Image 1: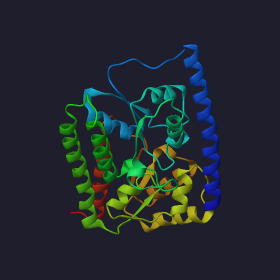
Image 2: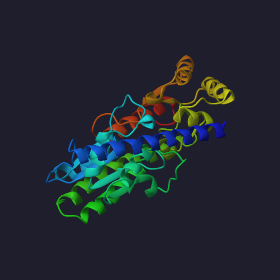
Image 3: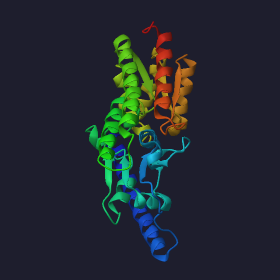
Image 4: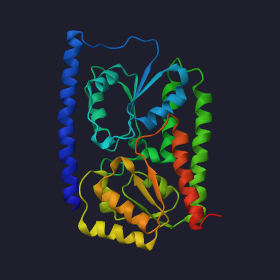
Length: 307
């Protein structure tokens, strides 16, 4: 079963690689013909694949730079994103590119590789020593967000045009550290409490909290990669709802008839369902992630491990 999942991932990456090369070729031809070109502006451009790193960058730089996030639709599956001509144009103009890494935005890495000149990049997975094939959803980890802000601050402090970067960084890191403390507070009271998840989008956050994810890893991996899990993993995930885990995390962006079946079983067993999105909603990262933390905290209070 795991072999089938890996083969599916390889085929998907092969298709995406071809699509990216096609987009780059189209974009290059349009530049030559004068249909599109680089944008003249006095402000530097920071380009992020996913909206979470883009939102943090925007809060960090304020009005001193333009920040563009290429994936912003909370109703679309980011795993299915294919590079567009607009994506290629933004990457061509970028002064800094923010990569999630770990195979999550390979299309963006390829656009960077196909630039006519080098560009500064920050790869969050590399910062956190997370390799391709491991869980790429690092934007649900306050520790990764802290490391990202520290690294981007250092990168921009070495450039002119960011006079207030240090003050903004201190303020943002204070907010992120408060988020991390909230997770550690839950760990102190709820370590080992069983929870369920339709896939691995919030796994880093749940592990920071010391919670035990009981849903079979094979099912979570399969759902995240858009393939069918094994019959035995699905049967176990459904049966676990009758054992009443503290809650079920449901990523609405990867909803399928299969995950909807798990959600329905959870509701039937009166297991609370916490709905989350993979792409950030709103424009403020701290507010977005704090909403998820608060939902988990309130649910655990009902569970009884937090007074």
